[in-house]
Length: 471
Image (cartoon, rainbow, N blue to C red; front, side, top):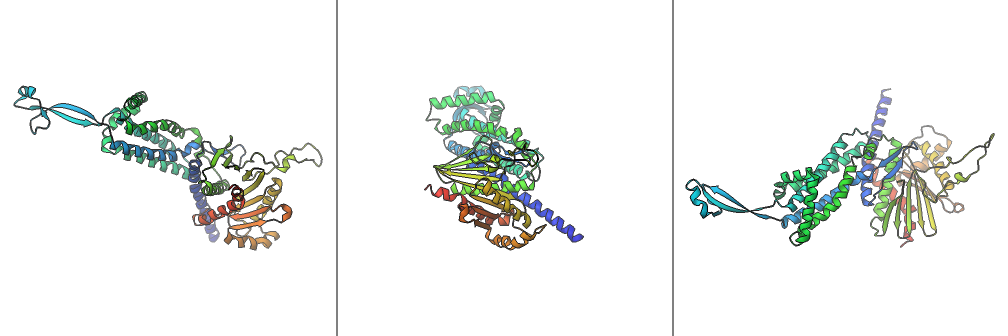
């Protein structure tokens, strides 16, 4: 009984570790894909409940964009510091020790013998342009602190905590970069004045207008500050989006409770999409779009389009069952509208008159019996959607919980292909060379190199042949 309890604890811990690993990979990678693909629309993933959706707001990727923007600002500051504006200030001071400055002879008689009046000339960096520069950094820093407080207050699940931690880490990097910029002695002295400006948006707006006017009148003198003014134009939009991180959309997403099977689907989908982008992102002709519902991503390279849908059917693809005639055995009042299948991922590739359809189902299981049963579903999708390739992705199989004759007969095959990452089965010519793929993807760190190789193989088999015809 003790051994059984120990095994149960080991299995539970292993499952927990897998969930944590998948979450740690999936959310940051999805956010980086937003940035790589320059997506300005949300990607929406349907949950098990047809009315529940996992929505990763595009605002969540703003810390990544802001990090790049702040690096731009860092270079702008370095350039300004080399050609920084200074104003001449003349102060009249009384000195009783060392004389530094020009003695004011006309006032000497008034203060002798206790002191000598002198005029001291100095340079000050307290100009409108420099105050605007420091105010810009403080403005960003304040917004980041506000967003950080909101995210820190959220009580997230184990699955969503890595997304929360990732966002907080990026926000901390941004705040640290702001502090690095403000540590410069020249700018540090302007912080008190700049803080007053940031707290009064009307005054800050007037200050920006003043600097913009002076830059127009004296362009040579303000040459180093022109990039700052351009940066502030970009900043306005990004700060507005950054504030959107505080909106309900992200809070709802971070508070979602997602099951292990759904997370495995997202993990595999993200791994597939990331592998595809890695292969094709350097193509200068690549264009990316997301449909209105956020369920279909369209990648366009020249005249070839790749529509990738998650728990959705791309436009132009239909289930044969949707048009079937249904007769009840006793009564005839039956509808078939909800009977069609819904693959986890469907890919429709078009190039001219040519078309290729790929369906993928993800199974978060290592039960050999369940994987064997999933094969029938994959074969059914080949017929139902007239697909060219049907893929089953699962963990490497172990013994079946409920073995039957077919599982016993097939177990050697399913275990043999583990060392090969899976198998590609080309069905005979009568089915026009349709392909069934069984792929093994395990959500652990030591399997990731092999996981990426498996995904790249799927892409080379299913997608690249259509793209190669392009070149």
